Image (cartoon, rainbow, N blue to C red; front, side, top):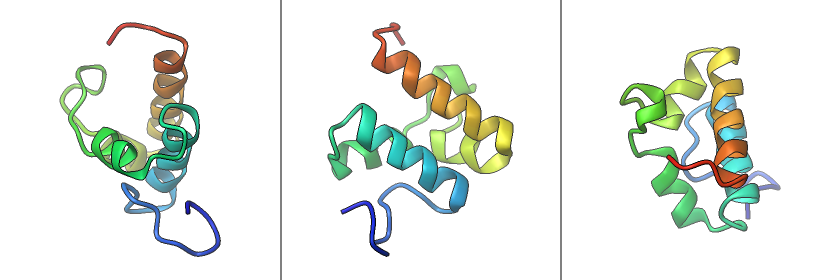
Length: 78
């Protein structure tokens, strides 16, 4: 559901779409609702920004969001 031309839930541009796919794949086993909630909720690691906002700012922002997803996946407390 995250491929073949289907609009990715939670992504507004190329960077946030990539981050949403990472979150859905790694954290939420493809669950689009959970991905949507994660991508649109402000996060303390992002100084109150949402992952969508940070990912769309720059390549560095996208990298940070993907690294954050990896940290969460590894069990880092947030």
